[in-house]
Image (cartoon, rainbow, N blue to C red; front, top):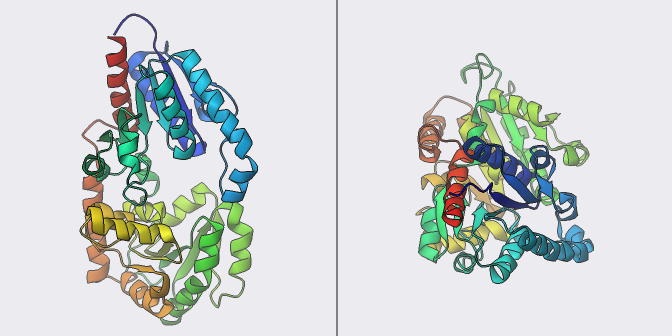
Length: 395
């Protein structure tokens, strides 16, 4: 590398990307010192580290079709503004962080106008779940791709995607917050046991699953009256969940906030959960689970594509099962979601026995599969790949 202080552009589209970006900046500063110029699109965490954002990230951080359509003209303007500002900054490397609808739109246009700027993609889109053709298209404008799941590099290789590096999942850096300390999770042999209920973090998930989950809990409580039912709710859905559980025969103890959720995970003996990242959180926390999902084409698409591309030999839509290539975690989709079946499995998991032990053994293996080499964190592994692109540009 030359003596010139490098310029690094990072483009994120929402708060989770801002968090990944800020941790990446810290890791890069550890290696490069404090003389790096950072610019692009980011939020408060990145800005607090000396990052200059082209505009407020809230302009493009929207969720839901109606919200996106309402703000579409502004989002389109921000895409073109970001491209112009990246070209003007002429960075030594451009890192696009998740939010592919926004960040990949930027990267494609930067590649056309300034092909000399190396592009690193941070977080692989789920090409293994839908639109697998995106992998090959990405290879045109993404030079290096940072994957959060250990099977993704092989998938991109099979699909003709960009060079892909497994850098670990963000959860792996905070797993100790989910694991019980002394006396936080009592032995499963005790009378009072904690059952977590996690019906999802989207309104549509709540609408589809809450009634079935309520009936399931009632059946478990009937035969195991000692269980404490805890439902961690995301803040923006708390009122909806409280209203939706009013008619439950067994009222859950609803908790809100990140710290309360972590405490619930640390005390839990088993969980009934909607499919999603939460299944990975539960597995890393050591909480056996039953997973259900209703009426969602996304998870059916995962199963359909698996038959074609064989990213896993199991027919699954649950992340730990896919990663481990196993069916250790029972999963139920659409019409398979029957409270009497879910309750029967949960009662087995709330007692010491082969079903519970099988999941716990697989969770130990999961940690091993997802573990990075000694001395590496997710952010440091990601920083190493970015540095290689940076050195190639500056050498």
